[in-house]
Length: 227
Image (tube, rainbow, N blue to C red; front, side, top):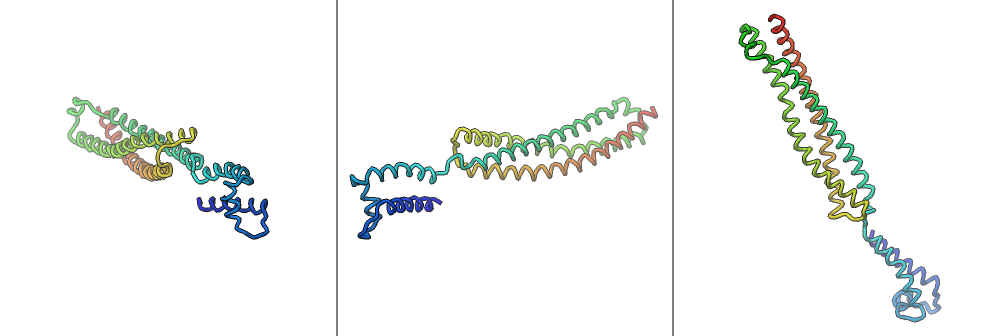
């Protein structure tokens, strides 16, 4: 890209010179109208003005600025926010499920005196039901733990996204911008994949916990009705 800009710059100078200074002897324009004019009183001011006008544009075009990253940073920011929203909604849903089953366990827990008063058959059924329920709901633990670790990392990386947004607004970004965008984009893909896996596990765990909850409720009602 830079070579193309340089070539265009030189071509422009040659066209300008050939258009405005026609020689009859066919001598080289490169020497007479690009290098010599800089030291020639007759043409030096024209050439100097031309160079001073084009040189800043040439330098600016060769150096990628913060603005060149605007589309990527804005797209990254939008995708990051959307992913954050999805992960947060999942976390809230998971918390709701766990709270609900915790309430079930609390509601259907018998006191020690009540347990002692049960007949052996009912005591066995109740023990089996509570064990099955505890086992089913325990499967939420690994999901919650993994989500917690991921959220910690996500919050830290969110600061990098905010720094990119701030740098874009201020016109200055520290570090390798391309690398930062690539790394954060990869994290979004990773989060999307993990979220899909967590949702599948949540659905599976909730179904098992619901079934165990119904069995525990059935046994609990049998005990309380007989009493």
